[in-house]
Length: 270
Length: 67
Image (tube, rainbow over all chains, first blue to last red; front, side, top):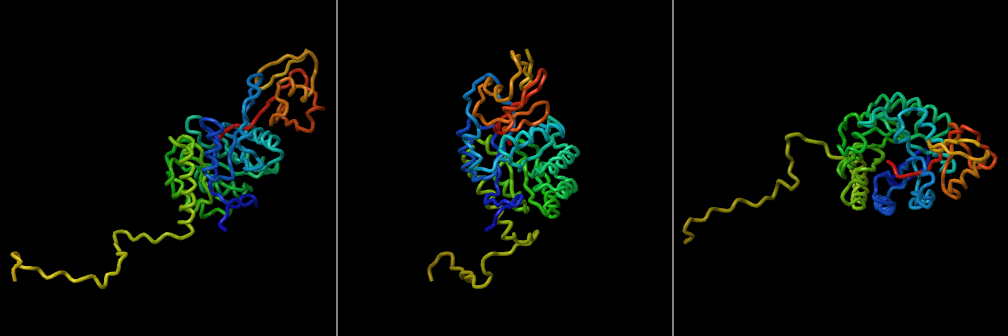
């Protein structure tokens, strides 16, 4: 079996999905099911105090018994906020230590602050977290995060929620070639072909949220993404043909082609 | 009278309370939540022994949809 292994645990799906931006929890659940994802990200936020006490809870729709929940640090701009958020997440999820770290640097682009990300990763690893880390597509940074002890490195394809697709496949290729831990494209996928391209490059998986949630039909897009990731993975494993630039090669035999018919006289009477 | 800041909002209480009492007061009993007091996690196992003092800052969080 061709499985994804993260921090010693085996997953059959290479598609990881977020749970944000859906219309309601029913749609979230339907999309997650259609995606086939086993690892799903969640955010940690203040609960409403004194308001609707019987508000539905996300974890009732997506129970931790069924999915591997990956709490994130979305919205954190400092090391301290990121570490505190994940400590709360670990308490919330009964000691679960697999987390997604992201430390942002700019509210407009949501670009990761890699300096702060490195610092936060170091603290979290010392605290026995298993850190899947969102980062830029800088190969040196990716390698440093791996050497520090992160369990997966997750470079962006393009900006979070932008749907701009894979802007720098060359950098991703360098990161993949250098890495000994799983590399997952996180952020920027817009449609199925983007996910396939990521997998064809040799990524171990793809993490996405908005590409599914913001589609006109999220559940159908979730299904498309599942197939796209599988197709890209199979194409990668199969090994694509070499490109032959400006050099055509017929697929059908060049021998045994029927002869050109003899020309008949124009009036046809012989 | 003590004042606690809960998720950024000040609230007054007649007498010192522990975290279990706070959770009941907030009608969050039985909910999947995590609590931090002055930047430190309060483990669920210590909710009833952790007394809250005037000026304490609490964060009460849940898991929500996110990417």
